[in-house]
Length: 241
Image 1 (cartoon, rainbow, N blue to C red):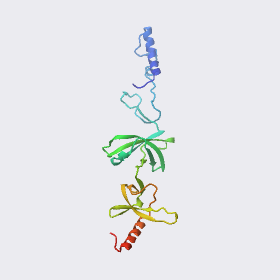
Image 2: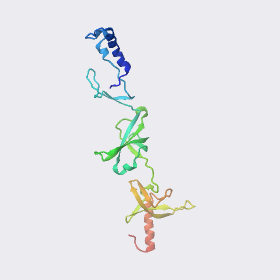
Image 3: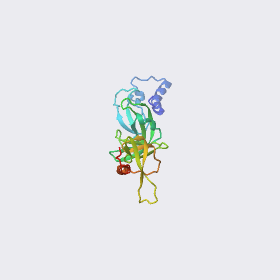
Image 4: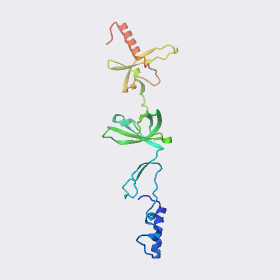
């Protein structure tokens, strides 16, 4: 049960078998086979490599197979556990690349998703995702605060633009797309309506209205929007709503 090597058990059993074979009585104090303390010693080897991070064993205490004597952890690699909200759980798959950021170390490490929990946590209302990362020199410590970025495969027909590129007007969303001209020193843009699939604080996922590779105005989108409204007011003679 304790995975003690056979040679350790054989060392203790051999004198008892010899005594039984020769018909000698076993003394109560066991002196003819050595000290009782020597007979009770067996070497229990750890089944894994690692560092002892917790030790519960105390000399002369009595333990059963249910007790935990030591906790051994291999520190050459670590688990990274992150929470994914229910809304995004369908986007997570085993094998996805995960970039783990350590904000206090200014360090980034690539890992792979190895496990996605089959249930939602009752405490966080999120799905736990786990990855393994290398830990050369054991510089990284357990319970460190991390931020993880998942690499989600793109959906065909959708594209991503900076949040600054989108302009909203009268409940609709627009971007200003640069027209392809031979003279790259000339900048011309056209306003184009888009349909938004998902919006974040720094990025917007566009479901339709744009194709990959098109250039859009970003930091100057509000200026272009104002120029567009001014030009339309001049053409119509009426202020835009």
